[in-house]
Length: 264
Ligand SMILES: NC(=O)c1ccc[n+]([C@@H]2O[C@H](COP(=O)([O-])OP(=O)(O)OC[C@H]3O[C@@H](n4cnc5c(N)ncnc54)[C@H](OP(=O)(O)O)[C@@H]3O)[C@@H](O)[C@H]2O)c1
Image 1 (spheres, protein in one colour):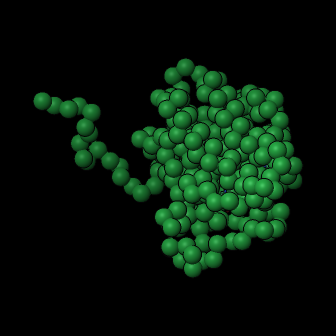
Image 2 (cartoon, helix red, strand yellow):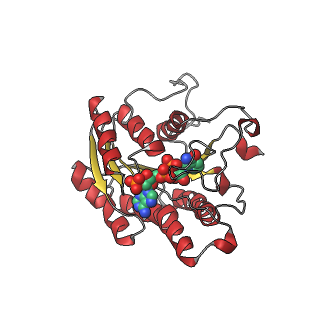
Image 3 (tube, protein in one colour):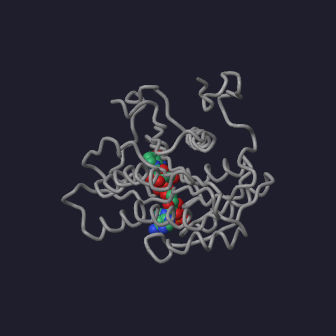
């Protein structure tokens, strides 16, 4: 008996990373991409040949600077703006991005997020709703719209930026943490719902960058508490994203970029 779906072992290539430029011809929407990790992700996508639609909310100057950095390197970057706490804005964003790019969005990077402080008893209903709107509802709406609008026969990818807290939720940053637990479930459920045309994967990050808004009650993980005894970087987050995009075998995958902290 021959089993024709088992490929010969020498079919390769088996390089550790994807081919340079492997995203040429694709169009990526990166939410909250003006600065920090989103900026790095946008630069990485453009560096691999994708046209980038960079979404921002308030950071227009940073968004323009990131777009200029992409264009200086020979890439394509369009800007779109909007508050993803507003469901109507989220509903329209993929269409707006497609108009800006003149192409279908076939890579969606759900990066925009809010990271508010507070334990459960400090969390108002409004704070709960805001975190869930930005961190969970918007990623769902955007993924749904991308999948609905994808032309027949085309494939797409969703990458959700998540947090290792989603695997072991503690009680701090309560509304943020619970919204990210929801995002973990959304990743797995949508991976099944949108298969085979759209793959849905997530990156679960440890402590990469301290909050932009200042430390507040945030404590950056001491290096002694990271199994690899080193701090992870935005570039390493990008490598994780590219690994997920490069491998058609992966959907519903939760890739931890955390130096092993999820094991503790
Ligand atoms: N930083 C870390 O170490 C870390 C750790 C674990 C997980 N993560 C996850 O990785 C991703 C990136 O992290 P980050 O620290 O770079 O993110 P961030 O700086 O906290 O936020 C990224 C962007 O989200 C946008 N945003 C916030 N509220 C929004 C709203 N209502 N509508 C639209 N956009 C909104 C902001 O855009 P504007 O500036 O344009 O307003 C902001 O620049 C996030 O999903 C985060 O949860 C990060």
